[in-house]
Image 1 (spheres, rainbow, N blue to C red):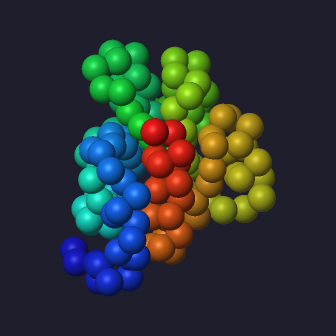
Image 2 (image 1 turned 45 degrees about the horizontal axis):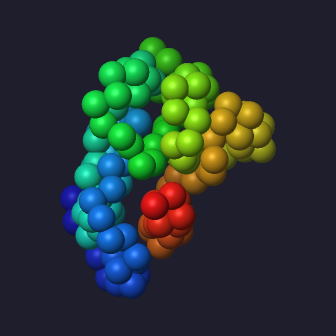
Length: 141
């Protein structure tokens, strides 16, 4: 996969001044590869969980202090809504951005009700997703 990196604003990389740790909770390989490629220009270490259960386990074991979570909503085992609730019980300060193709109004309401801090609809607007991620990482640190 090769994304035209000129689409992403060059100034974004200057605002991210440390190696951030982002957990991407995504069961779809293609969607994960897209995010990985998109964020490869930035000082971000990506970690992947393929379902909600694995995402929760990442927070339970506490080995990694994540700076941000990108949470797909439609996941096997434990969906994104329930995984978000459990993660927020463990670490209420970690920002969680819901990422889903199901962008109808009830889904958005359910995302915020479960504890998500923001929402991004698929397919991604490349500049918009980078800007949102950047804002959460810079504001938190």
